[in-house]
Image (tube, rainbow, N blue to C red):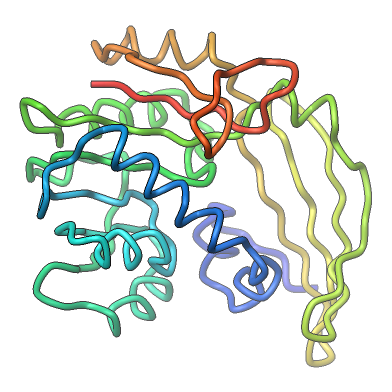
Amino acid sequence: MNKDTTTWFTSWFDTPFYHILYKDRDDTEAQHFMDKLTGYLNIPEGGSILDLACGKGRHSIYLNSLGFDVTGADLSENSIGFAKQYENDTLHFKVHNMCKPFNKPFDAVFNLFTSFGYFESDADNLSTIKAIKADLNASGFGVIDFMNSDFVMANLVPEEVKTVQGINFHLKRYVKDGFIIKDINFTANGKDYCFHEQVRAFTLADFEKLFDAADAYLLDVFGDYKLSKFNKNTSERLVMIFK
């Protein structure tokens, strides 16, 4: 059994299986969200955006196609290595730890698709918000697109099997010690694999405390990718605009 022994996200996100399991993510929905968000924030034409925890760069590439100067940053060397094939004069990718400032001012810093709350340490989560704030220029906005933990926990599917490209991914979901956890077991190429994902079950109230501690100001909260009003019981997303 190949059990990851390092920090869970450094091993799981670097495997090809992570991208196989999530290959059917809705790019159209993601693109409409980027259209809506950049319009709402009124980011200037040619404005600079940092896509923090960008993965293989799907949001970064689309944002760049809209005319923005985009930097995609992620801890996964494999993901950044893949994304670099799409680089151009106004699209760059770099391996980067989001707990630390990028040390360059941006018109916006986006942290999308629940790419927050991985860390065991509360200090690392706070450091990430401080880093985002430090990387905003005077008129810049930070955006964290997180799951609505209240909704997710109320609608958790405990077990399911998802078959993608001939691989049966056995998924088990549960809540433990303040984390929403997903165990992922599967067999591929004659080997058994066991990975897991864990994300801190942060609520809006938890984020408000983090923003206060980071001396950041929460401007707006939305509940979906159409930027509808947030409702803790029915909204699927928790999209926060701050500076």
